[in-house]
Each structure stands twice: as structure tokens, then as C-alpha cells.
Length: 258
Image 1 (cartoon, rainbow, N blue to C red):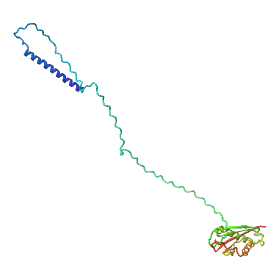
Image 2 (spheres, rainbow, N blue to C red):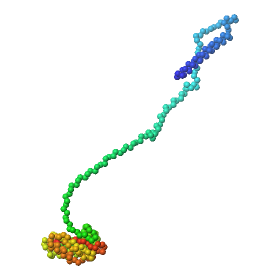
Image 3 (spheres, rainbow, N blue to C red):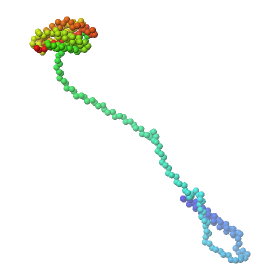
């Protein structure tokens, strides 16, 4: 706006200069070429002079339409710049999570079990001595029993595998001993007692090493049990599938009351 005012002021000065110059030029021309004052020539008629207060100024020049400073159709103001789209953060700007070291929990200490109170030892029943076989020692004996009018008799074979595999031979041995046991010579006090006899059966089936393994406490019962084994000549040869040369047997007698 200030620039435009300066331009108008300069134009006005120029126009005033032009007007003043024109007036001076016109006076000069009329003075040289017009009638001179005091001319001897007779002047006829009257001359009327009009006094003016001031000369009219020329009209103000309107600015050109193509003036770049003024336009009827001003251009629209440019829209405000749109904010630039945010760029994705650089890989260096992305915070990298730092893995915190695992807090090691102290291992749980296993609770000590409560001490077991000592158990009182139970009295063990004494078992009769068991003879060993010709092949295997310390094995549990297989037991086969027979009950008749005289009482109960049972046979234990030291080799349990023999008793399981050749059960028929053990039954045959038990029945043969029971048949040779006579109780007519027993005292009445023998009832309730038990005597154990041990012996060996050789490969040919003959008994040997007959002896009392555990006495009953009644002499008549012990003697009758020994005589029952002594009356037997053979139990029959041992089975062919058995590789041992003999078997050890224990036999007990348990008389029955009349």
C-alpha cells in the first residue's frame, strides 16, 4: 500500500510539471507572435479580459487495467501447506526391548521325611532245616501233603523248579512214605507233635542219608517216622529231564488223635 502511494505522488508531480511547462510555453509563443502592447496599429473594438483565480488541474489519470498491482479478479490465496505425512520411524528410532535376565528362584529344598519310628522286631518262627539238592542250594521247597487215618504227612523238595516241573514224582514220593507209616506203636502223648525227617533220593530212586532233622519231643513218633523211610527200597528213578544226580527231601509226620 505504501509503494502504491509513492507511485501516485510521483505521477501527480509529473502532471503538474507538464501543465506548468505548457503554460510557460504558451506565454512565450503569444509574446513573440501576438500583437505587441503599444502597437501603433489602430485597434478597433473592445477587448474583454476575464480574471481567473487559478488554472484548472488536468483530470487524474486512472490506473491502467492491466496494472499488475490492481486486478478485478484477484487470484485465490494458495491453500495453507498440508502437514507432511509422518515418515515411519527409522530402525534406529524403534526402541529395542532389552531382555531382562531371569530372576533365578532359589531351588526348593525338599522337606525331610519324618523319621519312621523304629518297629519292634517280630519274633520269627523257627523253620526246620532244609536240605539242599544236588544241583541248587537255598531254594524254597515245594510242598505236597497227604492226609490219611494216621495223620498228615508232607514232602518238601529243596529244588522248587523240580517240584513245579515234576509234581507227579513228588506226589508219588509222598504217597509211598505215607503208606509205610504205622501209628500203632505211638503213645497217646504223640498227638499234637510233629517230627521232621530228611533224606536223599538218588538217581536210581533209592533213599539214603535218612535222619531226624527236627525231633518232635516224643520218642515213639520219631522212631515210627524213621522206620517208615527205612522200609522203602526205591521211589523209582528220577525223571529223565532232570539233570541232577539226586534230590534232597524233608518229610514231616503229624499224627492225628483217635
